[in-house]
Length: 424
Ligand code: CMC
View (spheres, rainbow, N blue to C red):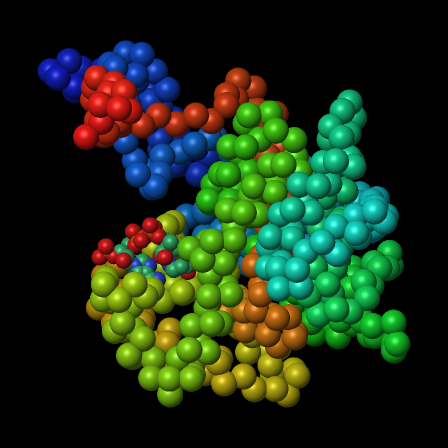
């Protein structure tokens, strides 16, 4: 067994080394404090492995992303459906024909919401952000579907099936239109698009261009190993909290503009550049100034120090979708210009900052007519199977413990209590 040596205050300690199936090396410090009294400190967890996981592999230097060993490119270009990818993430293998049919049957036949849950939507103001509604509704599923013997699998299916219904209802609520119920014969993306855009007064046909693009988007977002929201889901799940509570917390983590909220922020930024006259260099320069408080949204990544493979595919897709629709989006030209300006700037080159998954995804949602405020919800729908797979792995790993990091305390040392009357 490989080991690493640590010398602390002149004393040598040997630490076991763990090697992953793709050759990733980790120094196991689980017994470090017990042996030395010291802990490790890693603000933002840039160098900390929080678990062993067999779900998703990323090589950020080479720009590789694989789900259960399958390259993301192969899954997308091989014509996989999002529901198959969800199965893959959850159960480790792609489903065969029989399993696919059974799985799709389950996913469609659990997609209705309990009728009483519709009333919850009435309580939210119409200006409510759909991520807030999604988080609240996912948490409230735990009031209808309790944990219990043999309930875990069916609750997983319920959550996957109902999330798209919740998402579409939150949009309908925001524009004051009646809810549209799911239809069992439709695919996951087609069903969602119909619930979003159909109205009872006229027939609605799902545009196959949108169905295909949305399928791709959902697959590309389906998992990304120990990112902020997945780690949140695992952290909450590690306490023994139920599936719905854990996922609701993940939705909250995803909402932030440094994480999934970036897809909304990208479009807002592109609109800002457009309104300002379209000078992308001005915004690249602003992003380089730390005191400007401005960052290029959709740029940079903690793990990718090369092209994000998801972004490469999405850039192609946005071009294709617009071409097939015979449409133009001036924001796409601004985005390409901005990408070019940033990728040729030494600041971005030196720091290895490339466009990430959020840079082009919003332009595809826009082409479909999905409003900007719903973009992060779209991310959440895609990420759901990944979150659930991570939650399940956390709960089923032998010897897994509650996640409880330590800290280095930097506050005041012990001092004498002063009664109120004596305080200056
Ligand atoms: N624009 C300008 N400068 C940047 C950017 C950016 N978008 N991203 C990173 N930098 C700089 C940063 O200021 C720092 O510079 P220096 O070394 O001089 O201090 C350096 O690059 C390293 O950045 P960091 O903040 O230490 O990197 P991080 O790994 O902590 O953060 C990030 C990663 C994604 C939060 C960050 O790149 C960022 O804020 N990007 C914009 C928001 C965004 O697009 N988020 C979506 C991420 S991908 C999908 C997802 O996770 O949801």
